Each structure stands twice: as C-alpha cells, then as structure tokens.
Amino acid sequence: MDKTIFKISQMDCPSEVQMIRTKLDGIQEIKDLDFNLTDRTLTVLHEGKTDHIEQQVLELKLGGKRLSTETGNEFEIKKHRNQKKVLWAVLIINFAFFILEMSTGILSRSMGLVADSLDMLADSFVYGISLFAVGGSLLRKKRIALTAGIFQIVLAVLGFLEIVERFINQTQPPDFTVMIVVASFALVANGICLYLLTKSDSKEAHMRASMIFTSNDVIVNLGVIVAGILVFWLQSDLPDLIIGSLVFAVVIRGAVSILKLGK
Image 1 (cartoon, helix red, strand yellow):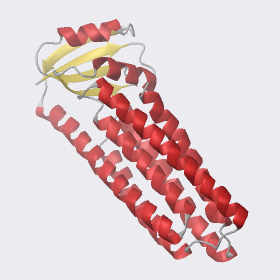
Image 2 (tube, one colour; image 1 turned 60 degrees about the vertical axis):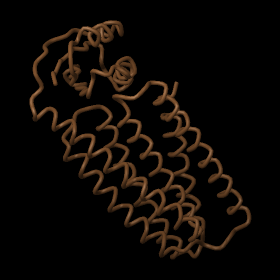
Image 3 (cartoon, helix red, strand yellow; image 1 turned 135 degrees about the vertical axis):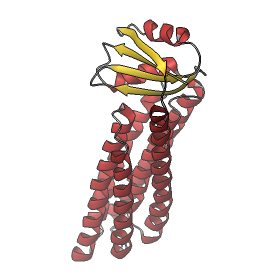
C-alpha cells in the first residue's frame, strides 16, 4: 500500500473536504483519506498508480498539487484502521442508546428521553456516513444521507406534535426517576465516546465533527437530567416538554445538515 500527499491550497473548511470526498468516492484503489485543514494537505492511502487520483484532484480546481508518493508504513495503515474501529464503536454505542432511550422514554412518558434518543440516532447516521466516506458508490452514500435526514425530520415533527398535544391537555408528569437514571447512563456512554474520539488524536474533519457532536450530546444529557429533577421538584411535565422541544429542534437542524450530504 502506498501513501500520496497532495497540497490543496484552497481547502479551507469542511465543505471543500466534502467536495474532495465526493470527487474521489468510488475509486477502488483508494483505501483511506486523511485531511489536514491546518496544513491544507490530503494524504491518500492507495494501491497502484496515482495518475487517476491526481487527475480527479486537479479537476476540482482547488489548487491541488501532488507533493510526494511513498510506501505507506505500518503506523499509517494502523492509524486509519483504528480510526474506523473508533467510529464503529461510537456508532454502536449511540444506536444502542437510541433504542434504550426511545423505549424507556415511551414507557415513562418522557419527551426529553424520546428527543434525546433521536439525537443519538442522528449521531449514528453521521458516524455511519463517515464510515462510508471512502469506498462504496456515491449514489448509495447519497441515498443513505437522504433517507436518514427525512426519517429524522419526520420523527422530530411527530415529537413536536406530541409535545403540543401534551401541553394543551396538561397530561401527568413523566417518571422522573427513569429520566434521571437513563439520561445518566447516556451521559456515561457519551463520555466514553468522547474519550475514544479524543484518544484517536485525529485532525481529520469528520473525526473533529464527531467530537463536537458528542460534546453536544453531553450537554443534552445534562439537560434531561436537570429536567427530571425539575419534574420532581415542580410536579409538572413542563420541564420535560421544554427540554424535549429544544432537543427536537437540535435534531431537525442536524437532519438538515445530513440532507445536504444527500444532494
């Protein structure tokens, strides 16, 4: 396996990163990509010649220029494999807690937990798309992003409608104990995910984005815990409805971002 480094002088933000990923997607010789926005370089791990890869980079007209090609060392290859293992780990954790929070949220009548579960599902979609960033067809990746985004928006809208209905009819408060306990477990899970992502020590754009998403999840988990305490203190479902509304809004914003990947 060889390693080729390209200088991309106009690669300033994740939007250019996505353009490059889209352009190179589907080239079978490419095994992995590593973007460094600080140095504006792209490292390509590949098999065979670089002529076709270099041509695709130049066609983007982002100031691309090949700097060097050398045989990839075991450290580089192992680093990229570990990165994918981390993404798989956080994807599985997030999806497992989506199921846990959705089921316990419905049973305990907590819209905060239901909304938080959709936030965890949103992260699962993001991590999944990152894993398919290299390899697989571009059309399949776009279909995944489009389906994921629409699915999230539909669920979030249904959640908002349920919150409006509960607010109007003033239903009984949710089970605050379940809210606090499950959200606390989710907080620990997100802490583990954040640790794994930080430990990977990657400067690549999608890994940094994953760290940001997970950091935001920690804040959401704390919000649900506080809402559960307020439900107990006030004996009202209003804190749960408020945190649910806020998180549903976050989910919709994230779904819109995912939909952009499907264009």
